[in-house]
Length: 529
Image (cartoon, rainbow, N blue to C red; front, side):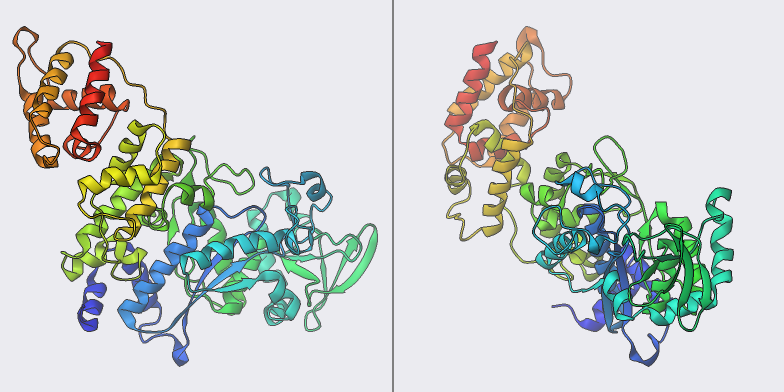
């Protein structure tokens, strides 16, 4: 157990990015927030489409900064997950049912549009529920806030009144950023039509700032209406700044595509008596084609898709790494993320405090990870399942029981879960193995490997087998010569025995799959030569 003072001292010196971000908050309030108030972290979510990993990563990364701040200061914090669910639906997403029905409600607040899935009060309630379900599953500590609830309940009334009082100043911030034709109709305040229920993009006249009264034209009629009680909302950029000021947000990260919007939001927050929060500007996730992930297009991985083939921790690990670097996000990344996560987790126990704080698993688990390690890699499991063709968990455990004496699903629960992921990944995602015929020196090398394995007992260690494989790769075979480079031998083994371009340590694979089974693979390969 690490001494808390030692941990705090190491955290204050750590270069891991969550601690670097937390230092911004210490600089913001060196003595802590006035009155002992909790440092407020916020993440925003626009529920116009189904939640995706790009949404989830903001909550995860923000939670990591939050925990880092707590480790460094011991001071209280809060995390608000804010849903802009009063926003008007601009277009029908591509990845939802009942598109025609949604098309009838374009422009209306998302909480006033029927759920196309037919299971929630509104479209926003459905998407909000999906987000919360996953955040709860992962164990996040957060407070969910609905924009609709805050507008309707009067929680924003004080700042909305300030918006009307400072209407000209806010227009002075926004108008220079707009095209001439947009300037002519722009208003930071968007009234909700009493006729159609649509969030209107129309000019407004401030009649009485204190009473919250505005006037606007709606279907040819001049309407006088209050902006309180959910009868209006703000354009999203002014809304962002208003929210920062109204809630007293201290930290919010966002993507580089929102840099300019963040600057405008900060100016508006200052006009309204608030202060722009600290935050990390991160790079965006890209799909397999290198295009920006979009909720409406549904071109990114869903949270459910990743978790079909990998555990929570693998997703968190991938999200943790290099937040300021653009990264692709597709199913092919999952095996590497799983194995890298477990490698870092295995290193944790033997590291000094400073190294632990720089280890991704410390931030994924908000402290020391569970003690369980793995006797095999996920990559090795994929290769085993791949050569077995159709495998069950019980069959895979049959091989593992020989490789790891006494291993059972009960003694290795994380491994048992990974076997399930491996079976699913090979079945649904991995390319079907195509084993090519060996040629040239490869034939002689495989014959030599078969002979060497024939002389071993089934209890031969992975290391002993690996040494044999290594020596064969360095050997010469008479007139045939040998391999130009050792990696050519390993590549030949992967392509002729496993049907893949990359693979595991062959000593480990042969020990796991069994010597007799491995000799059968060699025989099948040689029969093609």
